[in-house]
Structures are given as structure tokens and as C-alpha cells.
Length: 313
Length: 278
Image (cartoon, rainbow over all chains, first blue to last red; front, side, top):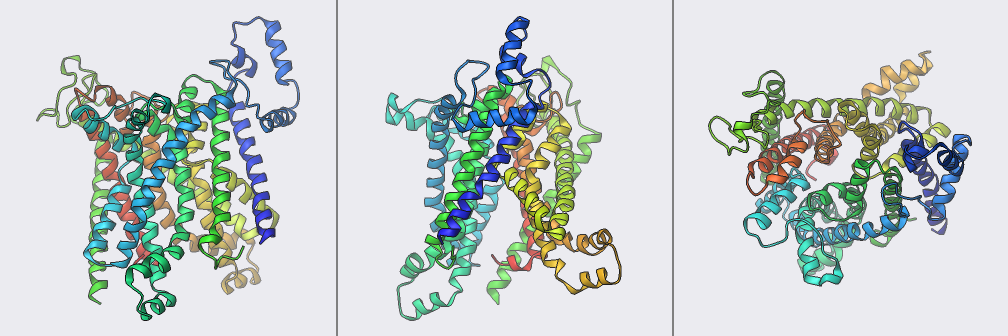
């Protein structure tokens, strides 16, 4: 057990190393002199030369990579070309907004999806099941950014109930803060809900066929308790893996949602930096998101046996 | 039995709808490449932001371009890119997966670590990074998205090859003196066809969605070529006075996805009986 945990934790090291290498060499593929990119070509030759030496551009490329990696490990992600700020603190500020939206939408999606998926499975092949399955298929076909635009169009422009774009921090008031989050979170919930419902449905169908469920029913336990106490835990385990995928999907797709709603999150920051050719920020954002995703999956793998004790670590 | 029959009818019905939608999509893609009612790129400043009418079914945009023509034309752009991306990812993925699974050992471990690293970039993140470096470019998207979807194919093919490798007919092929390359091409790759079809059809929807998302962010096919995502992005500014600019391109994406998802599910049910009824 302990051996597995250690092995699983160590296994992320090569992954993270290659992720860092991809982020580093990808940005180095950008044509042009990295020193000119950093300070601009209007500077005189001496300053450029100094920057080149400071950046280690005369060292072999793998030495440059190792220097860069060393800095990253110490939390130095470089400085933004646009603002001159340190990249990591700027990224973390934006990440809080993204994390909030991601966590809120996943929680709401799970609260709706788990009972819905179990209901569909329990009533398998009935009209209720087909209705839920049809809603799943339809929801999976609606791109979240379009759903977002339609929500803005209806609730923001037509009804004028909610602010359409922008953001208010928590310090500006809780309800104001929430009013800016309702539409972005709703636009994400639909698709994620469909994914979790589908997974929950199929794993519950499998669980309900097992003998211990028949046994519980034969003992005369109420059906609602059979579902809640006996079937839920085993059925939820596979959904946990899907949860990891969804979190990744949300982190990776944050750029789109945040652009639709003009939210100051990590994804929009990355896209704006791409437009501005602010490569240290692009690199940092890629690394940070991929790093978080790797850790999320690690945690989920380690949590798995809690829900499904049959999985021996 | 009656329960199974109603399930059978339901899935048949879904498969049929999916099939019809895909055919429609393909017709739109072909027609969009050959003929559109108006030139999708032609500006007409006298006909700006007109609401849907008989002469412009889906209205016109802020530059007076006919939205219906642009959606038709965008269908062929998106269909071409999505199909090329799926072909790129499944071809490269099959080659790498077959080598990794057949040879195994250290090479397999190295390939899998590389694929895990690619998988660590969730969603369109890797594609965003690649597009940041090469800039908006039609064929750049094929590579950028293809690499994002590559690890999925490699994993499936590698797993399949692992199980096929142990079969007697592979041993027989090697014993009779066939080379390894011949054995891989003649006996292993053809047996990967079923899982490859299932994963390719599942991938197609994701690729189409990602392509639209990239275009929406302005990092897809460069303008003036019309794309569904790009049209949605342009329409956002005029949401209050010209909502049709935000409605129709999104509907096109949704119908395309619905067709692909329904058809993909039907294909998976047919080819992968283990998944049946789940």
C-alpha cells in the first residue's frame, strides 16, 4: 500500500520534467532573439548583450533549460514582458478566479448529476431513463461557450436580470460577486453534468446487477437505502476518475469561458498574453495549469480505494 | 424482453437521427465548397446587420456579409480541418501505439512517459501553446489539435496490440519466417481497426468542438475565412442589436456535434458489444 503510494507520487516526476521541457522548447521555437523579445529591439546593443549573458543565451541549449528549470523550481517563473511584473504572483491572482468557477460548477454539476444518473440506472430502459439519456446527449452537443452567449443574450440582454460580462471581487460584496458568477458557472454546469450523469448511470447499472445488492434487497431493506448506502459508494468510484478528466477539461477550457464572460481568470490571461506575444506568461500559464492537473489526478488516484476498497493499492 | 426491445428502438432511432445529421453536414460541407447563395467574403455596406429575411435566411453581419453563406462555407472549412486532424492523430497514433505495444520494454516505457506528458496538458491547452508559437494558421491547427488527441489513440492501440500479440496466429506468422514489420502491418494493424474506428468517431466531436473554441479565441483558421467559432466571436459585440449573429453559428456547431455524438454512440454499441446497454 505504502509502496504504491510512494511509487505513484514518484511517477509524476518524469511527467512534470517532460511537461517543463515541452513548455520551454515550444516557446524557444518562436522565431527571433529571446533577448530582443524580452527588452524590445529599440534598446542599444550593449544592453541586449548584457541581457543575453544574463539569460545564459550563449550556453548550450540544455544548460539554458536546466538553468530555467532551476529557477522554476524556486518559484521564479520570469517576468512579464508587458508589465514587468513577476509571472508567478500574477498567475496565482488569476488562478483564484478560475479555481472558484471550476470548483463551483463541478460541485453544482455533481449535486444534480449523481442522483440523476442513479435514477436513470434504477429505472433502466423506462421512459424516465430515455428522457434523462436524451437530455445527456443533447447537453453534450451544446458547446459551453455558445450556451454562455445564449445565457448572456437571454438573462443579460433581454431580461436584464444579471450582469452580462465582467467581474466583482468578494470584497465588493458577496451578492454582487455571486451575481457575476451565476452565468459563467451555469454555462459550464450543463456539459459537466451530462458527463457525470452518463458515467454514474452506467456504473450504477453495473453495481445493481451485483449479488450484494440482490442480497440487501432480499433482506427487505428499503429500496432507497439500498441505493443510498449500498449502491452509491461502488457506483461513485468510476465517476471519480471522470471527475479528474472534467477538472482538466475545465482548466484547459477556462480560456474560452473566461473570454465569453470577460472574467479575469488564468485562461483569459493566457489568451491575452498570446495576443500580446508575452511569452513568459504563456509559458508560465501552461506550466501552472498542467502542473495543477497532474496533482489533481495524483490525488484522485490516491483517493480511489476509499470509495472502492476492492482496488488494492 | 419488452424492455430490451424499447432500448433497441431508442438506440436505433438515435442512430438514425445521427446518421441523417451527418449526411446533412457532409452535404453542407460539399455545397459550401462549391456554391453559396452569396459570396461569403464579399462586403456589402448597404446591407449591414440585416435581420433574417427571405433574401438573407440568417441575416447579415456587421460587414454586410450573408450569414447563411458564411455558415455553409464554414462547414466545409471545419469539416476539412476536423477530418484531417482525426486522420493525422489516428495514423500517427496507430504507428506509435503499434510499435510501443509490439516491442514493449524500455521503448514502450519511454513512449508512455512522453504520452503522459502530452496528456498532462488538459483540453485545448497544448493546442493554445502551439498556436501561440505558430500564429493563426489553417494547417497549424491540424498539427496542434492532432498532437493533443494523439495520446488517446496511442493508449488504445497499444493496449489492443498487447492483447493481440499473445494470440497464436501472431506466433504462427513469426514462426513461418515473416519479418516483424510484415507481421505488424499484415496481422496486427488490421486487428486494431475496430477500436480505431470507435476512438476516431469519439475524437471527431472533440476535435470539431476544439477547433470552434480555437477559432472563437481568434487562434484558429485566420480571417477572412469564415468559421463557426470566429462568427460567434464577431457577433458578440452586436448581441443586443443583431442576436442572429450569435444564434445561428452556435446552432450549426450543436447540430454537427449532435450528429457526430449520436452516430459515434451507435457505432460504439455496434462494434464494442461490452458497452451495450450501458
